[in-house]
Length: 380
Image (cartoon, rainbow, N blue to C red; front, side, top):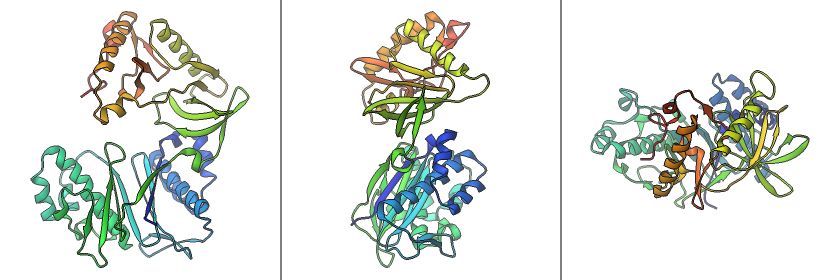
């Protein structure tokens, strides 16, 4: 069996109730690690890593104790299965094999002056200098994840500097064999989302299978909305006003938005209903609003499957029709002095209609304030 990779989006754990439910499902050691993190983002990632371990235990029937080598690499005490964890940005990843394996995921980060000399060998720096700006950005992530996955495969991790291994001969290769190692090692890269790099290092020539894990697979739970229970299926990226989940009841899917509760009970829900009515009144197409639970700060609406404009843009799709529909929206919003959240991930273009997936708008005094600001509508 080839190595396997399991990828989990941890951003939905920004919802405190879901975080608490997930936290109860990880072992005590992982809980202590999560507790030590100061940043909420790191706590979410630590929780995601712990849940992936719990998922693997359940999937493979593993009851062995987890031990750690002198450099901190985890392993099961008796099981033949080897594993390695990594996390960055919104994602936690678990790589599994019958032999040693190393994995690293990295989110692209702003350039830090002088970092190349700390991370890359002189030959690697020279190879990066020959690339275009975009090629260099991609190669930076490739090099970094190759180096970390290799050091994690060997079991020493970052106790050795990243400059201790050189991959300059493989600057533009997505997958390759590292024959300098004994035994030969194979590196496999995955472009699962723009702005991220993921690399697996193992002795397997066969490309590992990457599986995205849904929330339902790691946290079996449900939400109450006006006394009715809805089962969690999966989560979406956190929005400005709350966290959205895909839920089901009697086989019917819908989207549940858990609003950030601050101040007066039900205020956020009432604001969302007012925004919804205002936008529908000027002809903005939105998912149907099914119900509102003011006491819990939850809104349930229609689920419309499809890719957001941001996802389509990243896939290189032609967005000409969506742009024209957007111009018609802007004319209405300008006239009515209503402002939306204009990020492309908040819109979906389907069956000739531009659909606004958020539930909030803002009334502005000046019509010009209703228009997108620089950096919001990144079509190109």
